[in-house]
Amino acid sequence: MLSLCLYLAVTPVSDVVFDQVGRVHAKLTEASFTAASKLSGTGETVQSKYEIRYRWPSVFRFRVMNPRTGALLRDHSIEPSRVVDYDPALGQYTATNRKRGDSLGKTLAELDPSLDDIMLAFTDPKGMEVWLDSMELLAPWSVSVGSTTVKMSYAKEERKIVLETERSTARVKRIDITTGPQRLEWTLTYRPRVTNLVFAAPDGVYEVPLFDREMRPPTYTDANAKRVAEKVFDAYSGLSEIGYKVERDSGTTTVYLRGKFARQDDENATWVYDGTTLTLYQKKSKKWYRGRLGFPDVVDAVGSLGTRVDPTLRLLMTGFNAYRKRLGDGASVSVAGTMELKGEPVTILESVSANALISLVVRDRDGRVINSRTRANQQGEISTETVDLSYEYIPVPRDAPTRLKLTVPAGARPVKLEPRPVG
Image 1: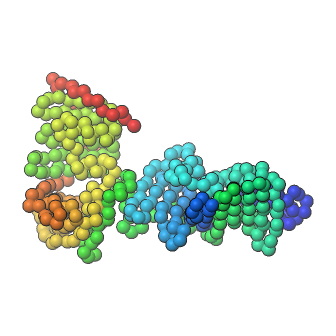
Image 2: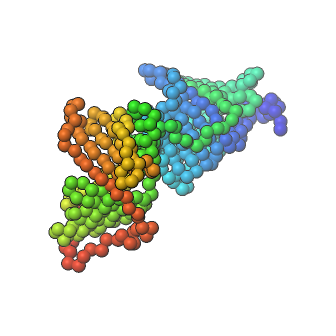
Image 3: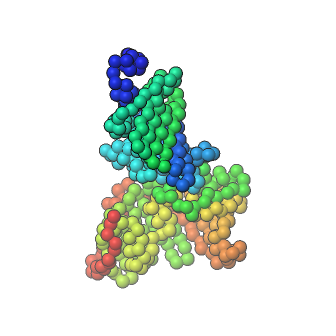
């Protein structure tokens, strides 16, 4: 391959540099680098710092860093089958299915609409070539070749641009754009190896369907309390199915959940939801309703028709870990004791927060909660009134949507609602 210096001797200088840099970046199928920017002339200087790792066309990891301390502020990871967004300040991350056919650039722009075009250019093999083509149109450019870098400069009226590349690799190293009083500087520092491409949740970090800024992880009085609590969290994490009977003062509620299918039976009503359609039968009035609803409308509809969605089921259907949510108000968690209940070992976990005192009886073998007692904490005074729940876990049929389908009794009267439209 001819060297850059030989090219410069026989070809217009700026064309050679732009073409070579574009070809190099188009072939850079994987890379790891830090990109730091500084925007000045806007009244205040704004600095940004990013860590970027990618392997086209499947993975692109974009980490937003504190430009002064280097601390991680946000972590976006676009992977072959999922898109992860991690907020370290909350200790939470979301994971959604990656849309088939969407490019890395489109997905990243949706995650962070404020990103500069220069950063988005790295999400596609042709991205940097396209960006460089737009720069090349601003001719004429001057070129100076140093011992380690090649610097291209453009100046016309109030606009000045400097593009600096590594002489040995032709990779973009620095971009400096001045337009009137504003100046934007980018500095790129490459790493020799591409590692840690996909997101792995750090210890204590958990998945949520949506970021919940009111949730704060609990603290633990000792390692044993943390171990038991995390066993509970694991038992209710990523559940594809669960069946249980929960007994409270008002009666017994039976719940089945498999995938998007849910069924609930209590003293007031029976209802079934398959992810799009709610069917509900009121037992006392012998009225029934069927209609297409999004899940938020299901909660409202069930309430307006004489019952409510069981709180644990509601959390599970919205993608939350039921007990991580309940203990997610900055509670202090401790082990209050151990014993045998109905022939099996259990541990009593106690959670104290500014809102409530919660006692959970946890099965040692699987982390499932079999008893729960909640008392309100009112400005430091624990209420004497309790909400007691007892759980019995039951199997969910594999053909639950068929076997547990709700058949409305003959003679039941239909009820009309005016729900918000789905979507």
